[in-house]
Image 1 (tube, each protein chain N blue to C red):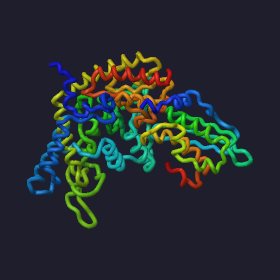
Image 2 (image 1 turned 135 degrees about the vertical axis):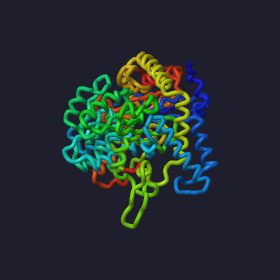
Image 3 (image 1 turned 90 degrees about the vertical axis):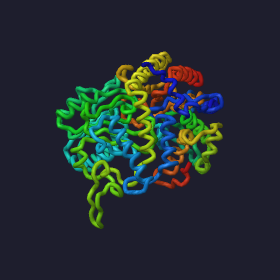
Image 4 (image 1 turned 90 degrees about the horizontal axis):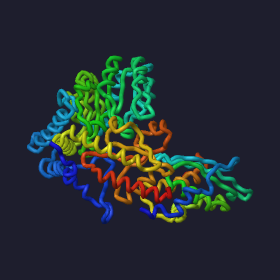
Length: 131
Length: 409
């Protein structure tokens, strides 16, 4: 179990690089994990080429959910929206570098779910939101 | 005679389990569900191996034996809570379904726009949401007794709400988060003086304290077998006879009817009127065995053991820097300790404790409004039962220091 709390997770949880809000922002979305009350809000600014110029997350929750959000934002800065859309659950788990059971998987993937919902828009195509 | 509670542990096979090789289970989640003694597991096993049949209408031997076992379980429940008769004990799926039964049957007939129903801020979702659903439909109001900062119900506020003459009052006998033991008899008396019908959610209190529905004078009480050493899938609604007799059926189907025609039916007598379809028969048999076990140990002794456990647990938990326990002092509390650990989310606490084989619960424990009130998203909860030991509390404390170490706190 100790493996879950690798240094990288604790470090990103305690000292997040991308915690905060961008105002104004081009993309803004937030959501909860009803199971544990984790909350993630993501704001992104895009450049003229449609690439992610900057991003921030805010929220509260366990080390896994918050570290995952920090790592996710870090990984998408400079990427095109099209590439961000292609991100899979496995990409995020690779970033975290840990094996998770079904309950904690939801913690880890909340940020990706929020990110994709923000990009596709609440009423837009959600077919890629499946975990 | 003093009883060595640790000797009871050998009756619970799961307590011998190792979570990983060399890491024994420390089960501190009995408030969510209790572990089961061999007596319960064996009773259900023997039932399926030797008597299994559907109950009531069969004439063959197995059907008669099954019917007898099922009805004996009802008698045991009635005796356990001191109900005047077994007809007043209705088997449901769990405490939640029993509340839904009262809300939908009694509530639908007796509540209307402008009426008031009084609940409390410490209710489990099961005693909030059914009322919310019906209130949205019928337009009656909901009032909530406030919880004080030390985790007690504010009885002055309760009296203020009663002055508005509510039709019903529904509250928990014991909070599943704060552990607060509420003064059921006193609150019931006050409610009756205001003309209200009283429902007590006994899901947490019935497994841990002696219960006497006649002395308490409650109108309805609900509880679940699985929190009191019994199986999942069966719970109880106790109600006063005149109320139950006037209530319309909740679910329709087989067994709840006396006669059925194509366009009409006549409901069955109590308690069958509220038991539509094939019930949880093996579970009732297991429930009966659980009650036998609890009575063998003695509810007074169980309550005393848990009081001893929570006093020790609170004393040890308070030693841990950055740890805050919710709820009142040990004397006013059952065996429940929900706490926060500064800077560390409860899910992380629970996850790291699991590495030591320690099972605690993390989250809002189906009491989200209570957590909102205390402005915390979640807590870690350790809870105790008759098989819990002080050594397990020591292991929990060691585990919490390890959690702090992982987080560099």
